[in-house]
Image 1 (tube, rainbow, N blue to C red):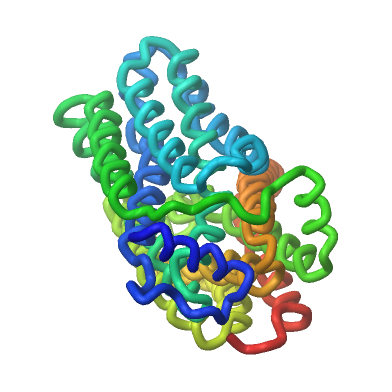
Image 2 (image 1 turned 120 degrees about the horizontal axis):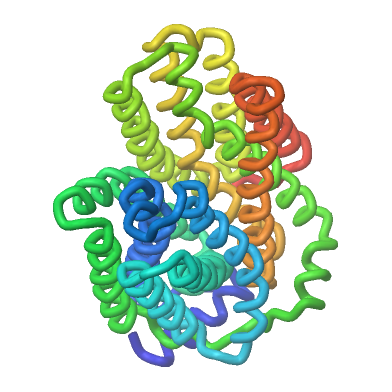
Length: 405
């Protein structure tokens, strides 16, 4: 794409109704960002399927190896605002290329790790890439397509998350079983290299606009609609991860499913999330409020169904699949709300705040869910999911975006 075309896209952020260049929306660049989300989420969740052989090979406990996941989430929350501010003078495509390079480096380091310290270093590098990428992805989407196509672009970008959720664990386990756990990380690194090549070809020049700073983040955070959106993010993400983190334990104890059946139910969760993501993108083009409210409401209904009819294997499977479908639509609605409706002129700052709060909510939800499980049983974590997501849906219905998209 020419520099003049990129210049027109720069103006889209300030004038959402301004038409895109004659060449049309930059769907190639959007797809390259989707490949980036796939690589990041795959790398983030690979340790889940490789934990036992990884821990054995490094001579550490599974609990210690599990801290690789925690390290990534914590660093991701810190890097979201930090990367955006440190790189505020750089072309956005250069930053995205750098994040993909860090993804590749993380996978290579993990594949060659000989100790827990090296593994944690790899996961810290991944956290930097994760936070930096997510903090800018929505703002970049705004500059790659016209305003009315933003939900569709976000849906495409987030499809990478859904596909990775479905594929990462089973493929990682399969490759790890045949060629060893290190091969799984090397395969992920190869995928990251292919992604970088596509990004080098497709992402146009994107000079920085709306430069981020800690002051701008604070100013954006004070906007009433942003406060509401971030509260919804906190409730939905903490509610989701408080319950879904322990969904396997729930399925083992309440409907007493065997391992094979649980695997199929979790596969249904991932596949449903893929279709939920697509449905959320389509619905957001017509009614942003609907997708932002109905998605958490469906999670609440699914959680209540587990609590009331969870003893039935069929009811539990349907509820978990519905939960996956609903959560698949959540990121599309929330990110579009933040960058397009709440503060379109400060899209990057809004994206930074959203990613930071989301990462904090993930950690808070998992920790709070764990405390509930230890002190009040597994059903208490599911109950919190139901309450938190229902309150989020209620807030969107009452205080969310008023004008239809």
